Amino acid sequence: MFSNAQEVYTAEVGSSEKVISNKFVYFEDPTNKISFEEILKSDDFKPSNSETPNFNITASTIWAKIKLRTLQNSDWYLTLDPAEYSKGYFFIKNGNGKWEEIKIGNGIPRPKRIIEVNHFMIKLNLSTSDTTIVYFKVKDQIPIAFEFKIGTLENFTATFHKLDLTNALCYGIMLMMLIYNFYLFLTNKKRLYIFYVMFVLFNMLFTSMLSGYGMLFPEWVIKAIYFAPLIPAVFLGMFSMLFMLELFKENLSLRFKKFVYGFMASAVIDLILSATRFVHLSQYIIQGLGLLLGVISISGAIIALRKKNSSAGYYLIGFGAYMSSLFYVILASQGVFTLDGDMRQVLIFGSMIESIMLAFALADKFKLAQKDKEKAQEENLIQAKENEKLVREQNVTLERKVAERTIELKAQKEIVEEKNAEMVASINYAKRIQNALFTPEKYIERVLNKLMK
Image (cartoon, rainbow, N blue to C red; front, side):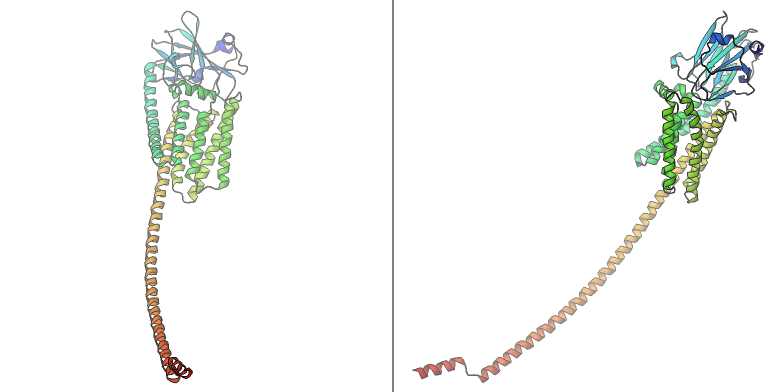
């Protein structure tokens, strides 16, 4: 049978570790009921033609098997990437002929882990010329792919050191961008800043889980993620959409915005689905939503760019870099590309570029807003000066009209007074004429009094 005919891989000390994923043989158990004792008797293992065997999203249990030997004494180690599985099991036959079970995975409490690095790593008890058989078993909610490597501790130390330095640089820049923009949010109270901060935060969470750094998280974070595995991806997408809508809110139509809100509602439904027994279906859906996220975001940026929004240029560069790396990861999970050690870091690098360019887009938007504010203030100042000039002119005109009216009233007063004087003189003149023409009353009264006597 094939299991008995499997070739033995001979490990040799070299300058670096060796990828041996295609030296394993594999068996897929769709029933999830086959025990290790039954696996030991199975002849159904099959080789893989791919250097990184990929089973994508599956509800099956995947078994892997390899026969190892070495002609050199050394401390030999076996690693497995991606280091994002919740739980897996290595079975190694020790010197006394008994099988030893070794548990690996982010779901295992940290004190029980063998070596705390961002790779699943076990020590092999390889003696010179002896043949050792290694089995591995995993069943998980995420896409299942295998990158097994074998080497000495010195081999892995050099590789891990290089990757950790690169990742530390990327995450350090992202963290710096996050802290700075959170400070700007606290001082300016602009929600665009908090959307950026939350997007970068969940982006770091998402990429760190993919890169194996999830084992460094507090256990409550890991438990929450394995309860609903889409938490990082969904919140990453939602805050990405909110950031885009706020950044280009003056340029996007109401119809476009409604479509984006519908997209976010679909992502929330998929998140809820991931906490149920339909978790594998939710993983298929989130891959499609991830591709749609890129289409929506880039479309929104192009619309804004066509409307002369300069922030859209920075956004397109940053989001384009991120979505290119995300497309690669999604297509690699489908088996279109190979997602090996170095290429697994592409998403972290893309995320770093994106965080920088989106920060530039933020700065550009508020720089333009500040210019618009200054322009508005300048226009208001000019308008205020024009209003002041108009008021002065109106005051001068009013004063002139008041003076003219005063003179006019004074002239009218003089005319009235003159007419009054003429009228009084006429009355006095008439009175004198009257007195001259008529006998005074007192004279008449005196004459009458004499006649009556």
